[in-house]
Amino acid sequence: MEKELVIGQVAKPQGIRGEIKVTPYTDSAEAFLSLRRVFLDGTEYRVLSVRCGDGAVFLALKGVADRNAAELLRGKNVTIPREEAPEPEEGAYYIADLLGCIVETQEGEPLGTLTGIRPAGTDIYTLEREGKEILFPAAEGVILEVDAENGRIVVDKKRFGEVAVQ
Image (cartoon, helix red, strand yellow):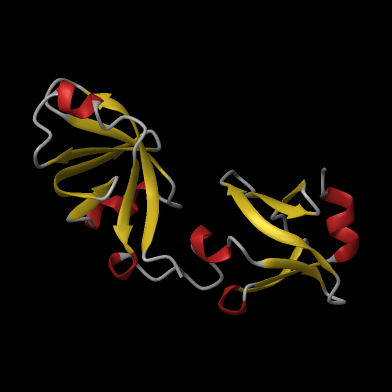
């Protein structure tokens, strides 16, 4: 398991006082409200204030005093130590825990390895098989079982065949 979780990415500076706008990778931007510290490229920053709006998070960080300092953070991933992350709800998983899982049918036929997840209304999963990418939505009826601990995701073969795109 990953020691750190990527929870967002710095989109741009916000205003002239060093605040940054963050695109959250969490289910809810409100997850940021309890943060006391974050890491950007391995550097720890104490969180001075957090506000949420329009699906974005706005952070004021200690040591980032003006727009020029905030501009240097553009594009950096926002991470937190795994032990500081809340436990996911029942049936929810951290993306980091799913990447690398083997995707297989209910009959045990391997379909590939999960290499990416694009968050959306219905997340889009990317798996790799024999050097080719296959995309499929994590729609109802496609994924039957997730066993992140053992690195396995089971899909319905018929439904997968209907929605998968190469």
